[in-house]
Length: 565
Image 1 (tube, rainbow, N blue to C red):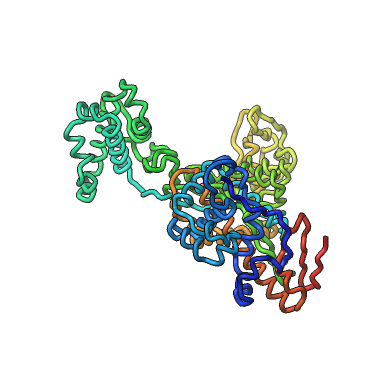
Image 2: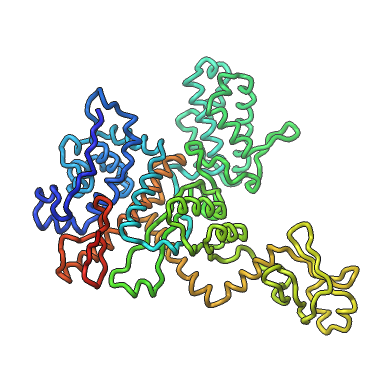
């Protein structure tokens, strides 16, 4: 039977029923803690209706209260707890009881299996996306956060997998296949698997051989593993019952990524020939490789920010909020992350006017795409300037045509080529007797001299010129603030090393950890607000922003607190 508490019941702020069970000193501590923030801004908006399909509403034993159970799964990610620690917190921690509105002993005592099942439902149904989006939207609306200025960056994260080298990847894949074959098809295993393979891969000391390998023997060892891998693939490629096994398909994928066959000889590919989306560990097939950061995943974070003047103009500056969070494999390029981020925040009504990002996001295509959506993308230009010395020429800002050469002479002819490029031509008579002819960046042609360039190179040239201006520097300096968010994300919430494997579970974990940052920031802001309320000694119970029946309680300081409906 489904058990769900009604969250639509109206409570008067400061007179909630749970306060009767705590002393005034404990209430004072709770009012400054994260518990009431979670209770007000996250708990009532959890997508319980998507979980009810896993429970019967007519038969069976009563389930645990669904709001508090889902909330416990979320808090586990917030505080980076194990299942045992989470069950203990739910049973004995009074902050958790208030945050989850969980005061019934039957709902406070939960087995680890129940927690595991609920976590599986949430991750498989991608409910973390909805939880993050809805809760963040509620906080932004309640606090009236300005979303017109945002910044975007990625942070490298790891799943619960070991970082393996190429030899170990091949070794683990072969071991995984042999064990699976022995379990599912023991007769085939006994008849076709040699004693040498069993000794090299399935004995107790097989994996310890890596400690005895000398650096000089590394290449020969890699070659031996490649040959063993190829031999297994050839042996079972005609057997349908074996070739349909996932572990066999994994052997084929790893062989295609790491090895090659030529002249009837198996060889290991050079490291540069191995694709970045290749298997990094047979236990986590979704992980990728980044040449700068290594194996694993990356999480894209986009948050609001305020200028120095905006923060100094308020006695209680509002917090920055993470508006967007998305996890992907580490091999993905940052340039491809901008468009999905803009699309999501636009659908949720949080589209920025200015977006700061590093050079990885700042290609010409992304800049123009952002402009089409009414967003000014501010980022350095990727790559180095061309050797064409564009800075010595004058260009038209509208059609990108050359208006003057380094000597100040107008071109005699302009050609727009089929490709997005332009050729400017100066006749021999025009260049005759020019003092800059020896140092001129133009090149000789049939008619005289020419300057050939692409439209994209001129756009990048204009951007680089703007990047040297004081206006750009004054705006772009706020991008560095997201590095502090990245640091807090990976250290305070345990986001650097997840407890899970696979993209679905990683997205589930990372989304909720991003929501945890928002909750901490709201808590800190409301704590300052609460102290200011006591300073003014006005309406002590109205200590936070809240949404009650669709009505906003709005506070402005240092002016008198004015609730308006």
